[in-house]
Length: 501
Ligand SMILES: [Zn+2]
Image (cartoon, rainbow, N blue to C red):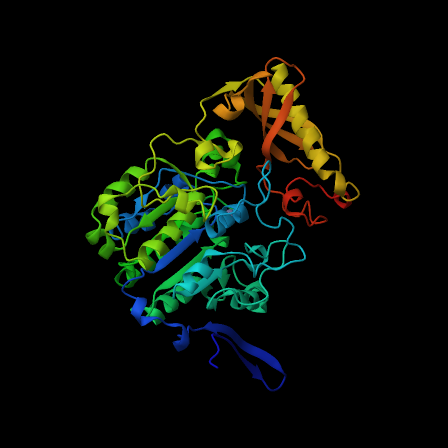
């Protein structure tokens, strides 16, 4: 059995001393899983994700990559693409399973507490691709914070045919990594290591079998807004070199959300950026030729409100259209097959078919607190309704912390930083019995953690005491080690451990 990963070390005999150590990786194609017959009918699908990069930030710091995607891959950038959950996991779960999880204000559609369970039986989309004869790949750096591992147990068995996690675990635990410069392993750049592995994967199966890859790079963009620029040249070169192998594949390059705690997040622009990740699709050249109508559909859809729910349905649609070999049918009928798609997920439409012009956050499945469609107005922090709303946010956070009160300090309102008011969506703007509602968004700081919190509050105009928190209360500055004493993912951003007092 050939090994994909290998550690090579050399020792000096006397005095006994390790003088060299390095980790290596290869992809050995697995002959029993390739499907040469399907290579021409089923286009490969590459999901290339950079964590925490908004649409605007991609333009600022990844211009070379953006140029290659637009000019060489003919990629379309989706200008109205919106996240559906706060951090990586609920957004990833949306496009990988079509299920809503870890979203405040909504019932979780999968087990919400995974602290003593594994993810092996989750209906993740790579299983559908596998079932249709694709060879599958999943790689994600920064192993301590991986999607399926952060405060949970990950997978018992390797979830895909090629799985990079064992390599990263060994690398991040190594002495060489600890003494290397940030983002490096010895003289190699960490993002480059993972892109090398992806390159080996693509080249190993090129023309032999359809492939599905989820390649997620976290550390590069996660902590600082500007840092991702370090990878621009390497990522652009990767895509340039691989164009010959990927021109007939779906190449979907995107981010999960914008930056969540860089200082820009405390501004209004930063809040909109956080909700609008970069999202782009490149349609296979051979399908573009067969279905000229697709260019038009994709161009129109790129100007509409879209989200990760649509990506999930699009992936399902790619599998359906390939299986029935009916790509050309889109030329004459590009209508959404809604009843069919509802079997896959309660929400989402295919980005390969016409998205209705009249779409709002409610119909697109985007939670109210992540919606970017409202028209809002700044309001004074001295306004009595803003002050009530701010008090409500602090009470709510303390209520959420109640089960962990032994470890976590009570939080106190320090300062209201800014506030906006806007009208809610039509479903919650008016209640026939009670009357009209108005929304407030309040940003405030609390003691002792200096947490910068942002909450959305609904107020019933006819009742001065009626304030209700809508959705999640965001923490918009870094929390670092403040909450190490709690393991509940949703409380990590609020808790200030008493042992730091
Ligand atoms: Zn993320």
